[in-house]
Image (cartoon, rainbow, N blue to C red; front, side, top):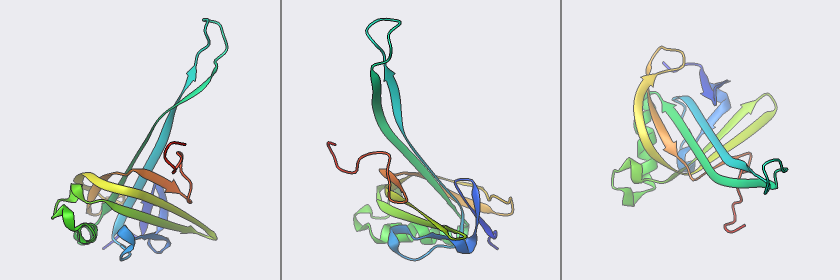
Length: 159
């Protein structure tokens, strides 16, 4: 039986308050946890002399990562949903590109995270958050993470 809670970035939510629909298809309920992160590296640009004030900030590369864990009953369904819209992947999970919208409801607040153009870069079996069952965990490599429609980088190239 599924645990009554799902962990989203470490925060517990009830199973009914989290909606995950890979590629916008069916809602999956056998989720144990979902995590995401993104960052843009920034460095101070030093002045010409050793004691000078920094001249500004240089923006580095954008990096992001995500992972999602399913109970075994739902793991196969997740894989089939990803492959259903990627006929060129021909059964190769790492070649399939997919979107992963996540909607979390808490009291009157609604939070939406979209993991954009993700690929599976690894999978493993681990223990669920409550320690009662095994779960299939997928490490994802997204192109972009949107939180409430906002990103850390410009969505328009060359800006």
